[in-house]
Amino acid sequence: MTQKTERLWGFAVFAAVLSSAGLPIYIHAPKFYADEYAVSLASLGTVLFALRLFDVVQDPLLGKLSEAVRQHRGASVAVALAVMSAGMVGLFAVSPIGPPVFWFAITLTAVFSAFSYLTICFYSQGVARAGALGGTGHVRLARWRETGGLVGVCVASVTPTVLAAIGLPAFAVFSVAFAALCAVAWAMMRREWTGEKRTEGAGFAPVLRDATSRRLLFVALVNAAPVAVSSTLFLFFVDARLGALGAEGPLLLLFFVSAAAAAPVWGSFAERVGAKRALIYAMLLSIVSFSFAFWLGTGDTWAFAAICIGSGAALGADMTLLPAIFARRMSQISPNASEGFSLWGFVSKFTLAFAAVVLLPTLDAAGFKSGENNSPEALLVLSLLYAVLPCALKLIALAVFWKTELKED
Image 1 (spheres, one colour):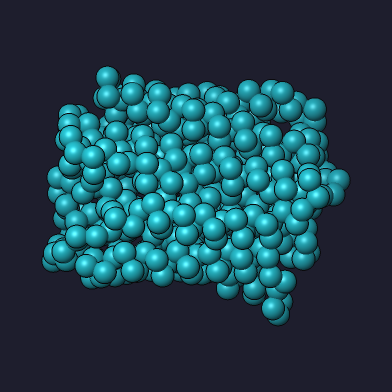
Image 2 (image 1 turned 135 degrees about the vertical axis):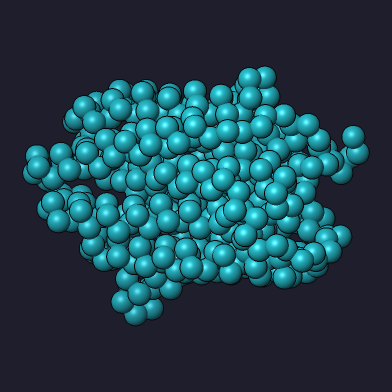
């Protein structure tokens, strides 16, 4: 195996950058603007929903663009990284120009658009690289990529809390550090984008005609929804339901460290028993562990920590094995993969749109207020949304995935 084939650490670092701009922004940004600029939850939810719908429309177009500029993909990736960095700095380090909710929308549009394009390029590039690895190459590459991504989530989720604890302007420093990390990731991945010749893609038709691909896209849609739900409501649940103000950082770190530690274990397990069986076990673990969250109340922080460990470990499989399974299918029916992963992004973004348009306005309608004392009825709605809804969605995803026929290597 050549040295170039072995060099997978660049994928891990690049994945860390992308993951830092993904879930952590959904966790921190709404609460940051609600607390700092008194933007209502309903307004934030409406903006996030509109941005997710925009993403749903633009992702297939970005997939086409990624394929059209394949010969110049390195330059396009550099531009997208610069746009994402600027959007992040504007979101957290620049005082809103005009109404805060408009500034929230503008800067997040830059972050999410660049994030979408980079994700499509990155995962389609991974299909080509995994092919050079042979055998279980897709799972092996996914183990590097998703472990790096989970490490990025861990660091990005807890960094603002640590920075605030030592007296620094947490989110401003975080956004500048993120921009610096984007430059490092570009340097480490720059050789991966070279030597690609543009080929005529077959569009979305091969993916949408394939029954297995359609089922995997549906599983991705429903399976990502619980993460979108729990990410959107995590800070509100810890603060208002558990009464554990100040414990958000350690709990987030515990959750994502559990995911990062479990990801390579799930990858190794999948190589022995098959990716499908391993992912089914992980989905069952997620449902069982997270179902206990509904019964938690004030002071149950240690019990919630145990739930974070179990559900975090299950997330490690979700983020490692399901993309690997889809990538393997793309290598069989749509080798260019850009269009396939633009559809993958499409369904993932839709779950975030669902979370934004349903959860925050529902909490607002129930009378829930961030940082204030809430009624038992409002807290019950929070618990139902945070704990029961994700388990129901996960059961649907498990049922469909169980019936999906896959050819294991």
